[in-house]
Image (tube, rainbow, N blue to C red; front, side, top):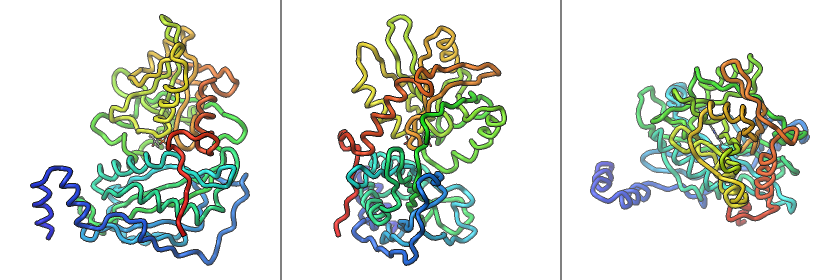
Length: 397
Ligand SMILES: *Cc1c(COP(=O)(O)O)cnc(C)c1O
């Protein structure tokens, strides 16, 4: 049977091969969902006591996969510990990938997710890179909708409040052999979160980091693999000891600016020749995580900013260019971009013992930073409809 599948895969075109592979074993199917409700509902924390990722909703979603039968029946059940053999492959060789997305309650009490289809695509790309199974994104989105509707009372209301969703996939084969996992678990947990900035923006100070590298060409920095994150914590600790909030990750001899902490990074520069303002971020060259927020900012900026005054660019740029721009008064503002904070203004960059001051003309952020935050917030909370970026969670009874 297995031999025949391989045979037909190798004889057909890629598309047909995909077809064979998806049909020979069970695809992810949201209609098979089994729901087991909690009998001991948790107390909900007051909104002002919410801490990112510390408390979770009453339920979680799980789907097991195995090589011979494919995706099993999805299950939503009370939040619980996992029980895994100590030899399980995820613990030894980091077969783990994850996503970060949010659900928001709009003013009509509807539950919305923001561009979750992008997270599904990205998660499949991450899974593929570490030989974990792929799944039908729309089916996982439907299952997430079910979880959201069931745990809707955990989604805090109000500006800046949301439910952080953490889709996760792990290899669960119990074996110390390094190889393709024959079992996996896809699960989703959800944590109520408050505004990243509870009383207005707080601009951060960065240490431009050249002694440690976050990602490199041919590596996996463009995938959301757990293995990418642990090695970045020590450099952050070191930066913190020197008084900086986060690392500005540089790459290569040229000291290209890539990302900040676990966010993409944008700069606004004035072009002294044309007088135009340039919004610039690093291109997706394999060393940059393809942020949904990054993509959203680029698209909205290209649509909304006046073409007479602005240029929006994805291009390589270095810390030296930023330093020179600052010296000439052409550095206008800078911010990090990611799901957790949407945007995070930058006020200072320490580089080789010197400080590059980044203007924050509004006091705690630059003008575009504040504007971008509003554009995205309005779409997330359904105050403005933009394309299909906001999905209302609905489940048929
Ligand atoms: C998740 C992540 C981002 C931001 O991605 P979003 O989809 O916007 O949340 C940026 N950089 C890194 C390294 C990340 O892990």
